[in-house]
Image (cartoon, rainbow, N blue to C red; front, side):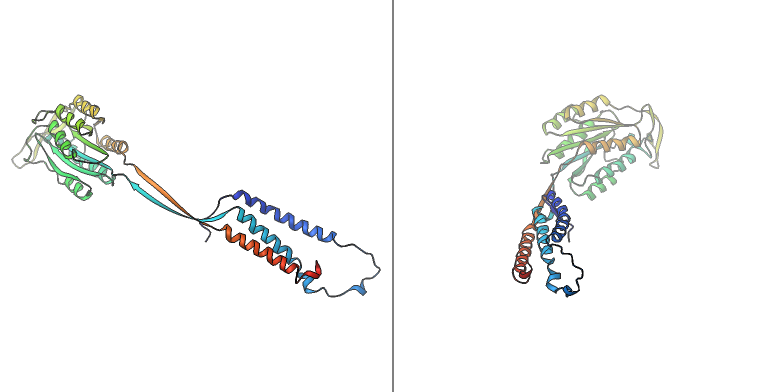
Length: 334
């Protein structure tokens, strides 16, 4: 009942400590009101005390009770009904541009680069409920795997559905992957537009060079985070395909155009990362998650139900009752 009861001026409640002192003062002053007379015997004066005489202290009780109500009223008690409204911003539109060239099957990350990325990317999508996502993939050319959508199920299925096949020609067209991603975001009205571009190679294909694609990103106010994935040195990578469709693996030197990726990120206001193992890849996406935050505004509304008026009325009622009894029922004892 009193869970939401608060006091606007609780310092007034300290006055309640005066009540015991008033009671003590009343007792002492009551004794002093009567003179004493020494008699050899009081037998002749013995009589039954009337009921009204016994009830007369009730007037003091009414007066002190009224004082208590007035003190509590001055503390201004009130019940507070609090409601909260959370207003979320429009969020961020994010396009993940993924290199799906055959080298992404290299086994320096476990079980390979792409499978490590697939799980981290899905976790990243799941932990950003207010954002919209799109997926583009590239190798020697690029195309859109899924347009920008707020439907997380579609995005997650698109990530699960990425396979290495003959639909995309060999090579690494970083410029094409970036340009395709920018094209998906150019009509976006989101407050922030972000591309996460991941590759493990050097731009060696495509008819749009990375410089032009970067200029497009700047024109459409799009921030690009670039990730170079692959260990330092050599990695066990696919170099040929057997007749049964399986890959032949050999140790191959890891070559990533870090200078290009750093330049793209720097020009667009993003950041470059290097993922040399599974843990590092996960920490990179965690860092991007912290860097790109959606603002959430929280509004609190308070409805106050004031209780002091009722307490004042009760206090006045007790005073009136005390005065009425004093000058009527207890009049002869005043």
